[in-house]
Image (cartoon, rainbow, N blue to C red; front, top):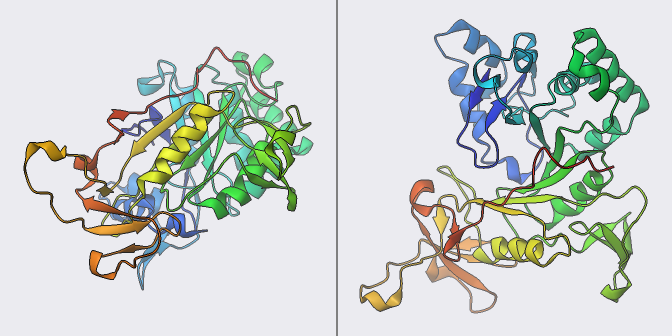
Length: 366
């Protein structure tokens, strides 16, 4: 099923795969788990069958690890009807992870072949399986499989486009929630062939510095993911551009967590990512998607009304959230208010940040 979506950074979701497995604490509040659970009981048998067996409810509602490959959805973008009549930004597999270990490489190749045959659309793939992403996208056998599958589809659009690599309309991204996941996943993204590379820091559960990522496991070297440069840890002036095989990040998305058990985001984390993007030599676009359930108070003090008490205080360094009575005297703590996702909104320092890369006109980056 392909559907329109309210997600700010895309137009349509396309999910030919259903089912996943948690891999890090950023998955704890995954909306897709509850969605899949509800839809598995849908009275429409086509919908319930698509989600059947992907979730269980024992200690908590969770993924089972079963992944359903939906052949009937695979060719939807080729139809040219309905939402596919005009060019779209397409978020691929909002109900799964394209590079999940249970998804056969052959099926992934078929999905990319559909992308090759529909060059009018821009496809956005977001993954936490950075290792498999890099491995497949750099494999000559996998690239050949994509070309073969595109030829099988017998589409004129595939004849020229399918031989290009990376595909000109495929954006690859990784999800990160803190510095640890950024240090692990971002280097793999920088080595992955893609027309555009992006990072989704949502839910943002800790500070993230994309300009100082450890490189090749050697603590003496760092990489600036936004400018695509690397060098010695100190001094920063030793950083240089143009490293072979390294491609920079073209877009950063950030946001807080929503849902009944959501964890608050410290405003300094979002501001830091925004400032890293704006200060980069490449002026990387930044999109602030949402605060989530919590946000700092923003009403001017001059209106004379008393301020409400913050629901929690968040530590800027650790992400620990405590009620005021338990907050220690040390550390940087920020009071946040539980307003709900809608009321919390997406204003950061008095304005919205909805920057996106220039789309179709840009040439793919190697």
